[in-house]
Amino acid sequence: MTAMTLVHLRTLQPADLPAYHTLMRHALEEHSRAIGISPEEWDLITLEALQKHLEDLSGTILVAENEEGLVATVRCQVHQQVSKKAHKGHVSWMYVLPEYRREGLATQLLDHLTDWARAEGLEWLNITVTVGQTEAQKFYRAFGFEIWGYETHGLKLETELGTEYFDLEHLQYKLSKKPLK
Image 1 (cartoon, rainbow, N blue to C red):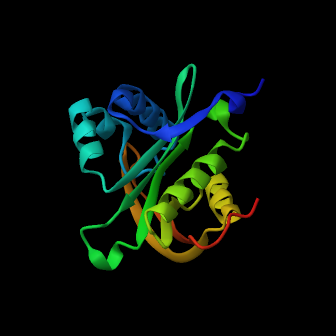
Image 2 (cartoon, rainbow, N blue to C red):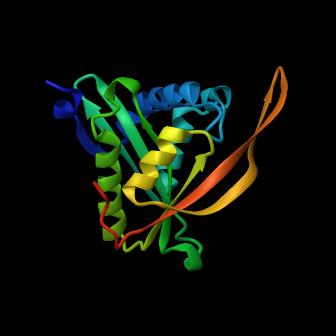
């Protein structure tokens, strides 16, 4: 039996926050140059702060779980407080544990997220990908996201070796589209 047959997609709940915190710590360790927060900064975020974020979020956080716990997640934030931006959502924090990759789980999460976004009346989804994250760039383009911009030095990372900058690729997805499979 594959991991996919055991996975259930749903909305993140307050009881999930310890497991979610751990899952995102894995994401940050694996992709520290691609996400705008460091693992050390993430460690400073308390479960109470995550609870407040979940309560205040204009959007959704989806998770995939199996009998072992959370194995994947994606978040979509909607800028409802700014009426001129309320027609679009910003996708972020897409992460699938390595042992569950290449089984269609990321596509299932995005399908579920686009269904949620359509039901919320959104017209567009935007996502930002660090240039050099080749698999992520290919995945989002294959799903139907199109590049609309490029940001030089979008992320800055201070290391023992000095300062590193990373460029960002901005993509958008028109929700009237159906994903290419």
